[in-house]
Length: 150
Image (cartoon, rainbow, N blue to C red; front, side):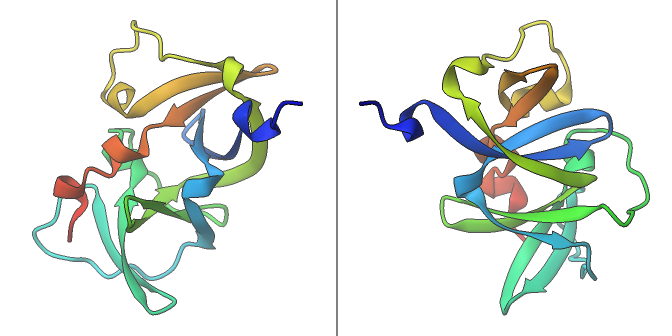
């Protein structure tokens, strides 16, 4: 009898511009509405600042800026996804957090080599789910500790 966890990955799907991206649920601590972000001088341009999240000061990454996608005004659906990688908690600002789905590992393919964009280096693979293409984020690259520290 096969264990379902070896074949499926539970993923939070979120939106940036017209694309859908996925992060494995085990990295996600919480999804929050946008709140006041305190700016921190002399940080990387994609670091929006920090928030006090339940007593923990958490750096916030503007994912659109990180991927060099034009920035837009925040809306009612803008969210901060708090993720944890290698004991570092970081908030990611996304346009919206759509849903949680199970993706079979077999449906995740390596990113196409023709993709030559800034965001390509942050993509671990592409999942085909029905008619949807979900780009799987490589959080360790996106949250490179040398660049994300505040």
